[in-house]
Amino acid sequence: MYRIPTIITAILIIIAASATAYLIKSTSLSLNDAQLVSSLIALFGCLGALISATFVVYIYIQTNRVFLIGQKPCLLIQIKNKKLQTNPQQKGVVSVTSITITNTSQNEFNDLTLYVNLQVWKKKLDISDLFTPNMFIAAQDRRQMNFKTLSYLSKRGMEIKQATVNGYSVILSTHYTFTFNNKLEERQGPDYKCNSQKELWSLHSNP
Image 1 (cartoon, rainbow, N blue to C red):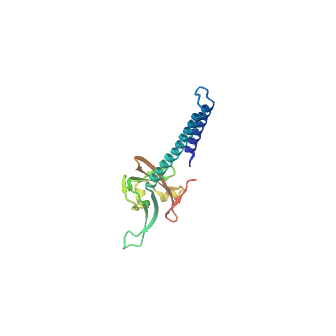
Image 2: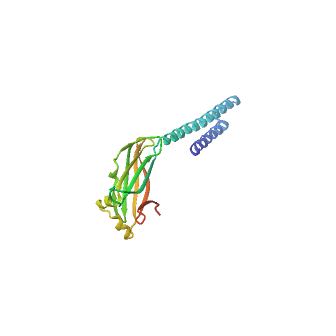
Image 3: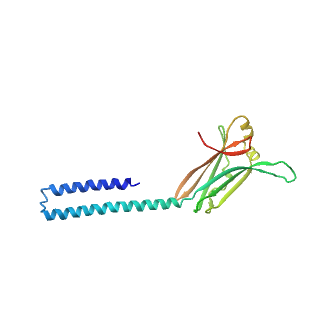
């Protein structure tokens, strides 16, 4: 933690030691004992002040850095599968994908953009338009978007049921961007894999 100020302190000590040797051994200065002692006291007093200032400044910078990190918002992304009855007069249910994003921090997002991509083998589909870009999300607030899994993706050119039957993995990946401290931050979200037999999304970890 204190690597940088320790290095600076070592450099200052080396400089002070060199200056001390010069004062003691120099013949050009012609210092008497009283003058030499006064010079050494001043030198080491200056050394102590510089070392102290180094640690004070470093701790101040680190404290501000920790405070700044504490102001950074954090997003939780969850993807779940639901079974909904679209018509009360019919017994059939339809599979619905629910994407929920939650600001789990006490700090707000001012321009949050969520990216959602569906990948089947080498084919990729961008469905980020489910969410409005550059969203404002207050502390502890959430947004949710639902879509009929099979019909919505089929209209976008992805037949995921057929893909899983053919042995292809269907992966839903997420990441998001936001501006913090005048800098664009990017965070990787979780990936979900489609289980066609159980008709649900489960967390997927890349090998």
